[in-house]
Image (tube, rainbow, N blue to C red; front, top):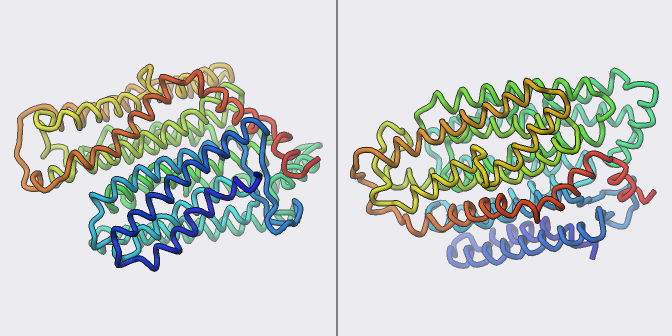
Length: 495
């Protein structure tokens, strides 16, 4: 049964390989991709239940015991993220059927889509720092294809920038791993933590602080933390709605996960690096809010809200107490769900109006009340209005900030909620209310079918908030593993 943890990686991997041979058979691709996605959701849920009852699960690939072989590890933190990823992937897949177009579907869209999920789930599950790099590359190579698929001018331009940034960050990643290996002599993450603890008994050596900062730069580029988010608004603006939803919900969160995992497992002795992380997280919130308020383009407003959310989550991680870490994990899952929903809703709006410029959109709620009120609920959830999902996580993060005597940071997180609400209400008030307009693309847009996917995510997000009491035990178990590295180390190394 331990082999369960590899299923969310193997299922999309084999599915992607099969879909390569079905590239001209669109219906067959859709059927196979749907069945595979449902199986991935079920497998991820079974992993959560196994971790809940039996604790952290580890699988030594090819029967080489840790730390000598390749190890996959599923604690509650990674299991919850894999499950959320599988849900988002399934819903975005449903949206793709009516939006992506057969000209894309014939060119291996669903195959590459599945390979992207392999990279994301692999990054969440690996227990080896070098294989984290490998899964990053699988994810990034797939994202390159999805970003450029369609060949529009903006896609080609932004793909060059996206490619350059990620090639540089990947090179830095390899250098950081090499430096770390030179110090600790191992690549197994549990073993790295154990070795760093031995080295740091008399104080954290300077070389490890440098490595910690290098990892922050590498994962900060992936996760779009201040000031390393410069590439994201343009790159995420280019692809079609389901790809944008995948990118916004998953790719930056892999960077956030990697910072959280390495800092709580490797560098928890060095509070100065956590202080740096806290400062950068707060600055991410501030600059993300400024961008979200400043723009009148509905895509850019939601894209800049990704930066705000990354800052809020990493601020919770940087405080490093039980309340803040619990809030960060809870809010991370919330943000994956609600960002995907919002980007899909934005995609529906663009399919109706043919534009993302808010100044050219108004009166949509008159003919599309379902779309309008679904967006309204998603906007309230994003801003953290009770009892929706964003409220619980943000409340715990703020409470953790007060407990950690980080009053300025906690106040900024609170103020960001109001400004985030303002930014998304700007879309709702200006785009859905006001003078009714007619749009040329309106008759061709299959609005009811497109709306199914974001409605599913908004309902799940609402239930996630309303049912927080039943979900918090799972979140608390994830937080316990992050706060006590020995739980992770003992499960992997069998000590």
